[in-house]
Every structure is written in structure tokens, then in C-alpha cells.
Length: 182
Image: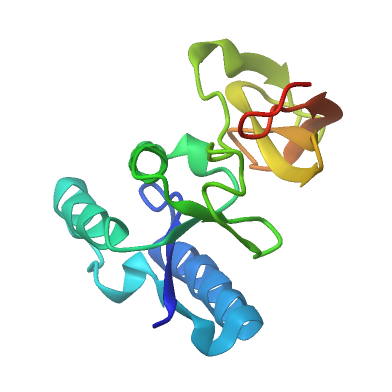
């Protein structure tokens, strides 16, 4: 039986066709990489255009709970619905389909889904180097690669106006895996 991968990401506030194209593209790439070993669950396959947020989330959560993995699109942390889906996936100990489309089981991932610390402390005011406007936005991880006990994390700050990456930084951190001691 194929493993189910749920795609999560921002939809509300975006042009419907652009959001659908992004979800469809990721669904295609996951299917291309894993073939018949996976079934991709794409919210655009069962949620209608213009459907109320609460109704769409009820459908998404019902489908999410039947999946084995979650794949979060970049900047999912900016979406209330996607953050809710990630929280549910973490509590249900689901695996992650990571940024390079590898399926990482919950236990192999150290029992923790990689997610940003989407708290108010990540909110900052920055001047965009692209459009020159000053706006409030969030820092969030755009790339996390774990090798052994080291996570290589790239954080980025997206301009709230032009949506270009304004600043980015990279750092490494040691992580505890399962019951290992560092």
C-alpha cells in the first residue's frame, strides 16, 4: 500500500491559480521521485475555489489525519492553516517529506518534526533591499539539512510587499537524536 503524503502551505490571500500551480508542481515532483510508492494528497484536489477557510480546513484536517507524511511548502509558517496542519502532524508523529522530497519517518527524525519557531520573537521590521520599502515580517527556515547530529539551517526574511528574500543567514547546530547524548 502506498504511503500518503499531504501537501501543506499557504493558500489564503494568494492568487488561486498561482497557489494551485505551486501545489500541483510539488505533487508532480513527489510523484515523479517516488512513483507508485506514494499517494499525494493535494488540498486543491478536494477544496473548491472560494470555499470558506473553516470548511476547507475541516476537509484538510480530515485528509491529513489519514496520511503518513506531511510536506510543507516554503513559507508555510506564514499561514495559520498550514501551521495548524504542521502541529497536528507533529502530535500524530507523522513523518516529513523534506525539502529535497525524501520521506523521513518520525523516529528517524529524532521524534521531532522540523518546524520554525513561529513566535512573535521572529517578527522584525526590515528595509527591503529589492523594493526599498520598510515592513514587518518573519524570519523562517527555508532549508534544513541534517547530517548526523548537525543541522545545517538557512533562515530567510521575506519582504511583505514584493515577497523577495531580503536577508538570509546560515548556521549549524547540534541536535540530540532519540536518546543519544551529545
